Length: 150
Length: 303
Ligand SMILES: [Zn+2]
Image (cartoon, rainbow over all chains, first blue to last red):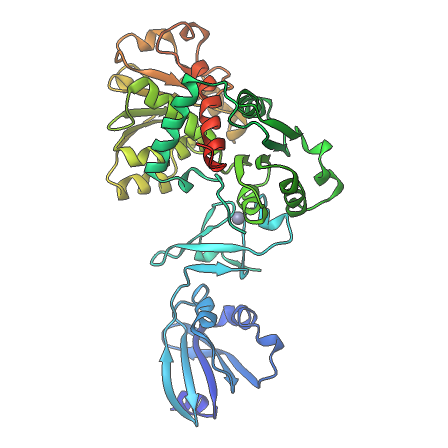
């Protein structure tokens, strides 16, 4: 009940729920929420049966494109996106791993051109189930645990 | 910016591979032509590789083209801190095609995205070296008459040796059977074995190079076992001679077997093998000129 209230407290906007606590700030960074004019509230170390400790982010008056929220799938594939309109939960979005990840993730290979030249990074999703990504440039394959945000 | 480039062997489809190999055969039959007359080819070697550079430059010179470029980074503008992007854009104003070797992985892919002219990757660090694969394929087809249904044994450093990985990917179009012979430390990585499984390609893995292991082999692909790859030098001393090919081992092999090696070799092929008619590695290197002529002219739309 308490959780329902927290979600309902937002009049219009987006609630991102079921984020593992330890990656909350990565998610904030991936969505570039440090630089938005909107009211953003977040909580972490909230109790969750599934995750142990979870985090939640509420962004007022903001609805994300599917492409934007898909970036979260890289870090938190089980996060839930709730769209709130007039205090009512009107839509739940599920996350889909994007086919291409542009300029979001750093390549872990120090000899990769993306770490030696001012340029964008680009990864292709090799395998959605096992979460494998391939650097478009050096062709190294990395798994989701090795992902480092740019 | 997109244009035709050859960065990775997987840029080529099966059909494309076969068509380039046919073109290479035509160049071998007639290697001196004026087909590149009036063309300028840049060879940008950000790290030195005399062998590869000479092969490319021979390919161009025999077809009447001109070569510009540099043979190591000390003489290039990158030593003055210029970005790769700026160097490539500048050179693509002058040349019709750029051949590049670079120590940084992915450099050629990035160059192909900023260049106005086609890029041929002549190796980017430990990543890709597709014309090596094309000359390997050409050598295999020429000596076996086909690429289909061959038994290919790869020996030596199968973990870091990118030539064998690229050859594996390219041969996967042609229903091969692979035999991987390597010390445990240098075994074929799982991702390539998974790839074989997903494609239904049969393979076996062995630790020892012996007569029995190569009795059904059509192509014996030898690679260098490098000391630097071993964390335990004792292990290196133990294995370095186990993977040396000697004439005696070849006695009961198939008549059509040919030995390939990307060169330079160190100790992995005994000098006594050189005169064996099954030794093919020096001709293989020569085939590189024809394969590169075919790749260059294809990218320029001249054949
Ligand atoms: Zn990379």
